[in-house]
Image 1 (cartoon, rainbow, N blue to C red):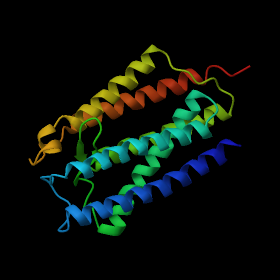
Image 2 (cartoon, helix red, strand yellow):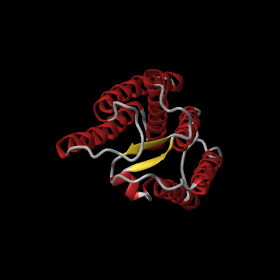
Image 3 (spheres, one colour):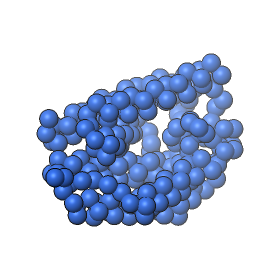
Image 4 (cartoon, helix red, strand yellow):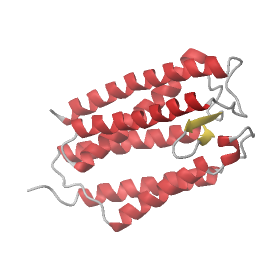
Length: 216
């Protein structure tokens, strides 16, 4: 299967899966936020919360499984995971906008994920990461298709890991709002910018290294 076909099927999966995510959240918000989603968060009963945590774990497993089936080598699989994840996330927010008229703006607060701690941030934060994941994933899939030997050195790994940690900290730092019934603290936009820049730098270095060598 060509790179274009792999990416097309990956994007189609992301679109469909994003709409499924939208449907689940529409049901949850009708149950718990009939007057509109807002902070402080309502406390969800333990049985429902456990189901939701398991659903989120299953979501990640499904994305990993699709990437494992579609990719031939590690970096291609990772790239397909990034594309699927990014498209899924963007379609999810588009779906909520279509169905619920939410968010009113990209500055609206959302609870992004619950594992291992609740993630909260304005919508523009996960959207920026999703867009980067899609572009980076497409680039890597095309590098693999053209016969380049994709690989990362220590600097590339360090930039990517530090950027990821910075972003995760920006999402999970406000435990009071994420786990309790408090209003969110101001979001640290500087951390988002730093995290995005580090990830972008990691991707640029990865592409530069990979383009220096073709498979024999």
